[in-house]
Amino acid sequence: MCSSDGRHGLARGSTIAGLAGRFAERMAAVRPLVDASFVRSDWARRNDELARDLLPVPPADFLRHPSIAFQMFVNERLVPHELPYVRSRLTDDRLLAEPPVGGPPTVPLPDSDVRTSSNTVHQLFHLLRYQEATGRRIDAAATVVEWGGGFGALMRVLVALHRGEPTCVVFDTPVFSAVQWLYLSAVLGEQRVVLHDTAPVRPVAGRVNLVPIGLVDATDVAADLFISNWALNESTPTARQHVVDRHWFGADSLLLAMHAGDPFAEVVLAAGARAVPLGDFLPGQHYLVV
Image (tube, rainbow, N blue to C red; front, top):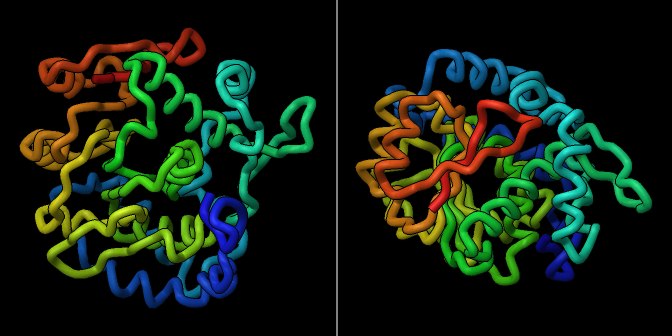
């Protein structure tokens, strides 16, 4: 994780209190940048509730808001299934450390002084399973596009796992783009994060570029890896078609987690992907990878 010393902790000037004080300004800059045809009504409602409750200054425990905690933190019952796999493939348990930003629920890592979360374990599980299933390393992808980034958890883990400085582009609703700016700026350092609010969007190399979905058409990016974990399940048909029409934003490698019965899976399989079950502990869920 990038910081004042380049790898760990908060960067100078990127304290959570200082960032939270500018949250309303950043939200105002991006909130109009939405394409309603891309957003299901249930997610439009959650976005409105989240914006209402986080403005003007997000509380210290903003990750416990129902629109985040109940939608984006997986149940702790998954930890015993996923943690052994993850730890067996990591050389440093500190990659499992959960930053305190936003007051996330945490659990102790056995035989360690590290506290982690079910969510961090889950995100690392996705990336490590992708590497095993495809034979491709995450750090072989210089440019990564994520469709639907939640509060920024997977992108934080990807940057930590990557051995270089990847160019990352995260498309999401404006409200969640603003939340990602708050969270990732506090964790990675604000100098590593760019919240785009004008067209055209030219991603900044070596940064995490947060792009509200109203600027998707104005974004010029050629990805090496496209990731979307359940977000395409919860996107509108218009949004899904846009992703296909953009040819996965140029990516020749895919990591999608999806409900096995979703009809869109057939589109992904037709694009050359293959299905890999997540595991017996999550029946009916699979990865689609290239």
